[in-house]
Image (tube, rainbow, N blue to C red; front, side):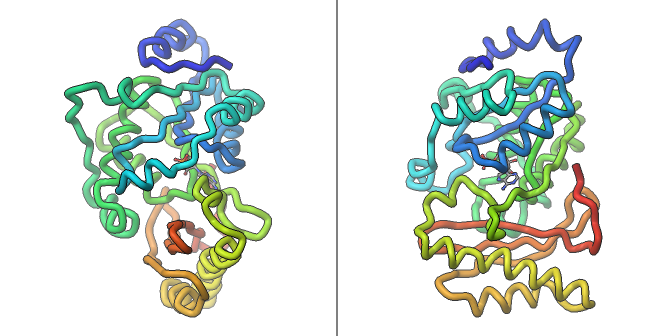
Length: 273
Ligand code: AMP
């Protein structure tokens, strides 16, 4: 695996290999866990060349404190990526991505509204912009995103469609811990007690899914479960569409950590992969 920090360097590496290999891109902010590894594994089985980007994108954070606290484990990430079969790890500096004078932003209007878009103003514009930059830099055949961040995936899919970007976006199912909590880089901030309380989110979404299967209201059932949960502040529960599937998505705050999760509502639905 090669670690590359410049846009020109990555382009130079990929240019001669492009004609003979399908290129996969896995965008991440690092602090790699088994969820990221599932994306890499999907990429590796479907493409000859795997590029993973590792960039904690400052523009998509609401506060400097949240950005500063985001876990950074570059050395360990490099080892994990290499062991997972990544060919190129692209880890640019902030100045490389946003040189002086940078001023362009992509906005995906409707899909960015509500849920995470309401909780984190400006977030999806920043996400769409960095994804478009990465698509232009790598020019991948396929790009891999997790269903865990379902609204983000929906924003990227909409942008790719609207802007005629020649990339096949693949959505990988959410990887969970054995107790059901969706893996997230932010989980390291949870105390043991908070981690226990955080299980209320997957449990509430499961309750919503069960209610839906019986013809009931999934949003109401999940909200009720979260209202009764201890040490948890509910942000939202809502339904959304992703790749033709209905999802029940929710967000909670436990202590100072904000978590998101979702489940597929359609009974017996196959994961999109
Ligand atoms: P992040 O580093 O948090 O920006 O995530 C990078 C990519 O990994 C995004 O496409 C996420 O949706 C995906 N991802 C994060 N957590 C998980 C998970 N538990 N299961 C599957 N994909 C995930």
